[in-house]
Image 1 (cartoon, rainbow, N blue to C red):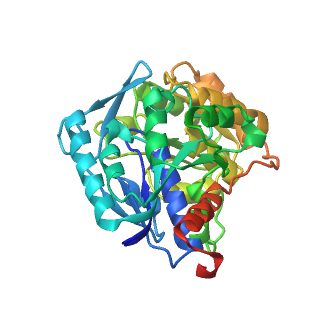
Image 2 (tube, rainbow, N blue to C red):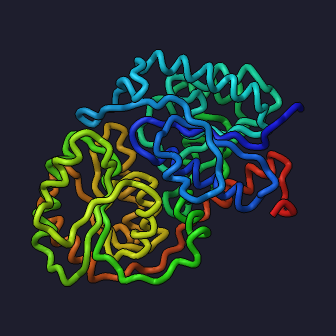
Image 3 (cartoon, rainbow, N blue to C red):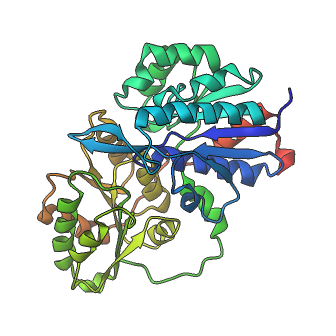
Length: 389
C-alpha cells in the first residue's frame, strides 16, 4: 500500500464542539503514545486550534458548516464562507476525497456517522481501498436519524470494518451496544469515555497551585434561550456571597451580540468573561463548582476534574442529552442537578450552585480512558506498537 499517513481522523462539525473535542483527544493520545505514527485531523471547526492548545496534533481546516437551532431542531445555514450549506457539502466531499487519495491513510476514523455530514465522506470511499475505516460513536447516540438509518448501515457495510464506542457499558448498560451491533452488524469495541482534558493534563503537569475559583460557567454556543439564561445567571450570581470567590463565564465572545450579554453582569466585580479555549480546562480543574451544558464533552470534563456541577439541557429533539445526563447523574456525583435551560429558575440555580460549593465529589469507577484506549486500538490497526512510545 502506497500510504503516506498512518491515521486520518475526520470530525463532524456544525454547532457544538463534542465531535471535534473527542477527535482531538484521540489524536493527542495517538501522538503522545505513538510518536512514530503520522496523524492528521480534518474538520471544518474553526476553534480546533484552541481545542488542541499546546498539543502536538496537526490538522487540515475545511470551510465550516453553521447550524441554527429552533424549537430543538437544528438546520444548516451559510457558514463563514457564505456558501450554501448543501453546496458546501458537495465541495467539502471533493476536498476530503482528494485528501484521502493524496495521503492514502492506513486507518481512517470517522466520527458520528459513516457517511459524514451531508454525505461528504461517500466519494472518499471510492479511493484508497486498502484503508481500514473505523466509525467512532458516542456513549448515547439519541434518536439521530442519520445514525440509525438503513442508508448508514449500508454505507458502513460497504466501507467500514470496525466501531469504536466511546462509552462504558458498566455505566450505561449494554442496550446501546446491542442496538449498534444489531444496526451495523459488528460488535463495537468498548473504549470508554473520551476526554480531551485527560490528554491536555499531560501538558499541564507542572502547573502551580492557585487559589480555587468559586465556579466556571460554560456556554460554548448561543441558542434560542441563551440571552434569557444569562440574565438569570446574572441574578443568581448577584445573590451568592462573594466570599466563595470569583466566577468565570466561558463563551464564544466572537459571536455577534456577545457584548450585550456581558453588559448584563455590569456591577458584578467577582464575575469575568473568557473566550472558549484551553484555559477553560485549567480553570475547571481549579474550580469548586461548574455550570455546563449537557453535551458529551462537558459531562466528561467535569467527571475527569471531579467538580460538582449543574447541568443544563437545551431540549434537542434527539433526546441524547437528557438520556445521557440522567444515566451519569446516577453514577457520578459530579452531576449534582439537571435542569432544562429554558425553564430553570433563579432560585433553582442559586440553590444548586450553593449546594455544589459545599459538597465533595465521590470516587467513581467510570472508564474515562477512552482517548488512550482508542489510540491503542487505532495504532494496532495502523501497525504501530508500544515500541513507538
